[in-house]
Length: 364
Image (cartoon, rainbow, N blue to C red; front, side):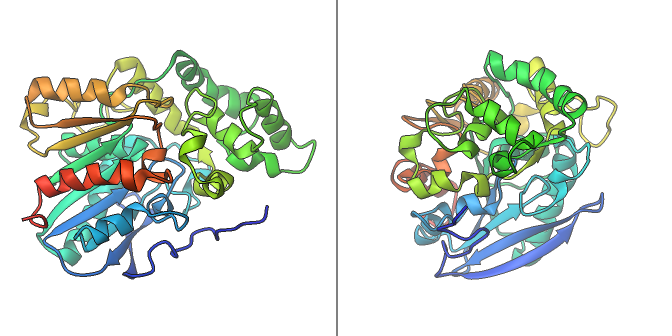
């Protein structure tokens, strides 16, 4: 495939000082924070990607991206976390049994300790997407992190909900893939494998059911995530170059996380994968009214991955703490295009900044 945009490029943020800050988790994984620094600020913004993605979703050079928008809006110290779900690391393509509990208990606390060792006691706001959002919210409501000034949670948070077809995939897919097909990971680039290999034939079979475009990676992502044609975004919200490189932006992924998501879907809210695990409390929602951090829940009205998850979550938390949290439904948007869409800078980013401004010293 001929690339118009290099993988892992930093060209999307040319006017900031960029620095890498590696750190390790208690279970022995090396992770990384990337700092985009234009000037000291009393408010720090930490960006957290979703499963198979990375910091790249926030710094795309083909259109105005979230990091640039935040920097231009007065938030001069923006950080992006690459945790164990990032496609910048090999962890998801290795044989593993990681769960969202590991992220909530190890990755998020270690990242915030590293960040605060550098920036001190400044106010920290978090903008999180997909399973990065679920994991962070588990950390916040489970007490492994605190002193968070505000949160923006996109697509899903504490009450994962999916379509019936997706629920079937979550229930049976991991075992069928791992033990039936001998495929412990799914990769959106299976369509680039040599002909007559298992991966190429699988991608071809998936494409039979997706006539909405001719891009195999787009078809695979719709199979891997959600229930739609396509599932993760609307074609009309993406630049053509973004659509063509979704296989780069969304990497291969191990299937064990699906088992944990399935348990949450069946429960109707976040739960630990292993009930006997003592790293997190047994009931992650028990103290919902006591979490004073204001949350903006974002969701597209075409969310075919986590459907109305954030609408339900806002309703739940608003009952526990009336008026503390807000909900924004984004017309025409789906699961990931609120960050990666070509006009998200106009339709979505100002809503994020408005929420940050309400709870920051930048706007004062």
